[in-house]
Image (cartoon, rainbow, N blue to C red; front, side, top):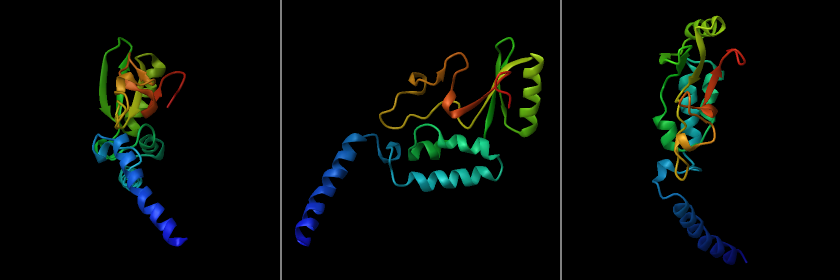
Length: 156
């Protein structure tokens, strides 16, 4: 009985591995479900937590997860500023920059701003490009699911 179970497992594991390889033919770093993701993501978040607050670091949990996304994501957070005349600029995130930007939103000098680690969602194997995803904000050129939007309705 034990031998037949062992043989069944021995024959099944390669089939499962082959099915996973067929489902993800983009190279191992782009495959979702890779066993390395959890440790790499935890380390990236631990590193960012030294300098950034938890409400920003948690953005790394949003979106598709694959090793390439974790390894290629920036080691910083950025603000995408939308001026009232629709001019746009990026500034590094800091608590002071965020407070200043929110004050300018309240005064009408800015329409809104976004805070993100990467403004475009990463496309792991088999996923659409960032600008084809449902959360893509074409006007601001940002994927809403991986960013925090700050405006008069959503003060930050």
